[in-house]
Image (cartoon, rainbow, N blue to C red; front, side, top):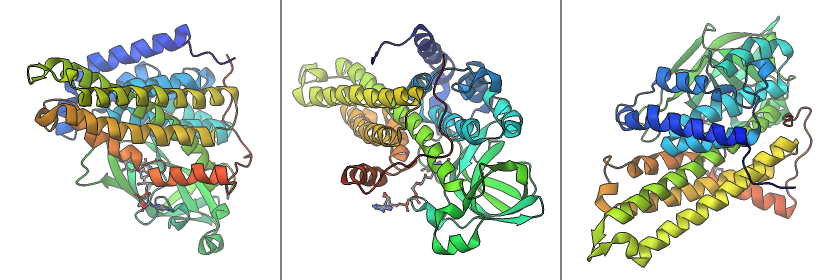
Length: 401
Ligand SMILES: Cc1cc2nc3c(=O)[nH]c(=O)nc-3n(C[C@H](O)[C@H](O)[C@H](O)COP(=O)(O)OP(=O)(O)OC[C@H]3O[C@@H](n4cnc5c(N)ncnc54)[C@H](O)[C@@H]3O)c2cc1C
């Protein structure tokens, strides 16, 4: 049976996150955005108190033990206020914590997952490099075995939380022959701490969106990583990277859905307030059309992420459904933000209203965690039979009440 009614627990979560973000973040976000300020104490501290940083991690590992629909609800509510908040859910909770939960050893879970879920440590995900985004096989970072350690050398760019996270999931080639042949079974995944010698980070300069969030680069200059920090087995890095994206994309999908809703609500408010030709602009059919499109996009995007979350709860593979939800919601959010600015006229073209910020923020999600084009190709390839999902050694744990 498919039931769209939220449980009492999910409803309470929705209300708590909504109230916290409206009270603690909304009044300050314009200023933080303008000053490019990542307010770690207020944002990360608040999210930790709400239990969001380990929301779908079992209580035994420091998490809140909630289901994956709850992860989507939190993401939607956070991005309703600002994309920078949802990005934390995507990289810390979605990409990193759920990967440790699924692929980590008991020792790795105790050492890294527990403090991350409790919010004592913040975590990121380092796949992209200056010469490798969509084309993961073009990565250049290497991890050479030396005794009981791996020595990592390389550079990662466009990494969310690069300057503030404590731990990173880093992908590197452990088989240099396979690197030459671009065979992804030569890639491995590592847990790297910021404090490891040879790690350095800095901001991406001139970034024009998600300004209240941190985005940067980091370099690994012969960073010695203990063998115990290898996540999964040698050669499983590509599978882990793709597994992580199934969870990250889910939060991006739900978040972009929240952004569509924010654009819709701001547009409705403005359309009732602004008058032209003697009537509220909401009376003009062409304005109604934009608002109606936002509503249909919101409802469709929400159903798509809910289905993906339901599949996760059931323990079923959902790469295709999650990818579709992410693609649809992010493209819809770009359309909604553009139309929200349009409805606001010149006022939309200033920071006096939030829709300009929504417009700047929405674009990145059409690029990260699989560009619009990569998602289109994926969906076509499933239909054409060029792509199928093979089982992996580990799968995201189903939700058990
Ligand atoms: C704000 C922000 C935060 C980010 N955070 C992270 C993070 O935390 N961790 C991380 O690892 N990465 C992160 N990224 C990086 C992001 O994942 C990459 O930017 C993304 O994968 C695209 O790679 P690219 O920028 O190199 O573009 P490219 O891969 O160079 O693509 C350029 C263009 O070519 C198109 N294209 C490429 N290949 C094909 C093809 N086969 N067919 C058709 N079109 C194609 C793309 O769709 C795109 O339009 C972030 C990016 C941004 C903007």
